[in-house]
Amino acid sequence: MNTFQISQPKDVGQALAAGTPGARYLAGGTTLIDLMKLDVETPRQVVDINKLPLSSVEELPDGGLKIGALVRNAALARHPAVVAKYAVLSEALLSGASAQLRNMATTGGNLLQRTRCVYFRDTAMACNKRVPGSGCPAVGGHNRMLAILGTSEQCIATNPSDMNVALMALEATIHLKSAQGERGVPIAEFFLLPGTTPQRENLLAPGELVTHVTLPAMPAGTKSGYLKLRDRASYEFALASAAVVVRVDGGKVQHVRVALGGVGTRPWRSLEAEKFLTGKPAEATHFRAAAEAALRGAHPQTENGFKVELAKRCLTHTLSLVTA
Image 1 (spheres, rainbow, N blue to C red):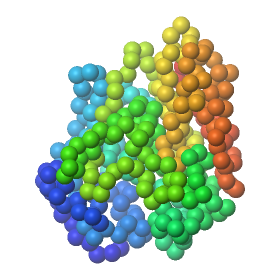
Image 2 (cartoon, rainbow, N blue to C red; image 1 turned 90 degrees about the horizontal axis):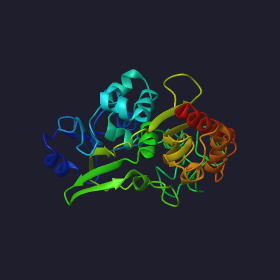
Image 3 (tube, rainbow, N blue to C red; image 1 turned 120 degrees about the horizontal axis):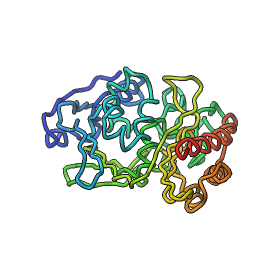
């Protein structure tokens, strides 16, 4: 780990002033500290933001929810409003990492969680995400855990978060603050595809801080759920996962949002599955057809072709569970 300076601002203004080029904000540290130990991240300045007033969950007048960037994953998963209204988010959070890590990990940090691709985390290997232009040995290499949707010749790394998949299905808005002002970014626009610039994973600008996330109110009668398939029962990243938000009226799907995890270079919203399901009877045959639509654009690699069928079955089963 390289030498660095650390500061601990007491308010957001001080934090933004300290967020100079080359600095990193530190919250729970469950990703950043690991990457610093590996010399993947080498910030000259670390800004500890844990004293900032960003750790509350508030129910909004319109029925939505405001989640501070420093809310710990464990607390958010158990919050009464989340359990009652946003089951998909609670289930996704509880399926992630371990209890100890959930006690430390934060909402903002989870949004910015970086890939677990072995080539990205090994500085002895080439990686376009870490060193642009150096190559992507995962293509044709060890890629069992990597993406089949949203890939490019430059990068096939998977977004590792469970929380982000649920937030995608819930159509969350990410609120950012910088010295230039504040902005809210829909989560569908926040995460970027690798394309030819895999080193840029999201719209966050240098020195910009995630302050909170807002969730829209759920329409009456809406149900949601999250299913994660993995190699072992705990402390493991998804091979495939599905987050579903759905409202069935008169036996037909009237509202549906679908997001997939473990298979995309970003949390993967499937507009194709949603379009197919809307207005159709909530039946297993239609769920399977929607899953086929969701994976139609998949580009499996040498070791992860099994993910195509696995993701289809995961989504089909999740829709069946949520609409039962």
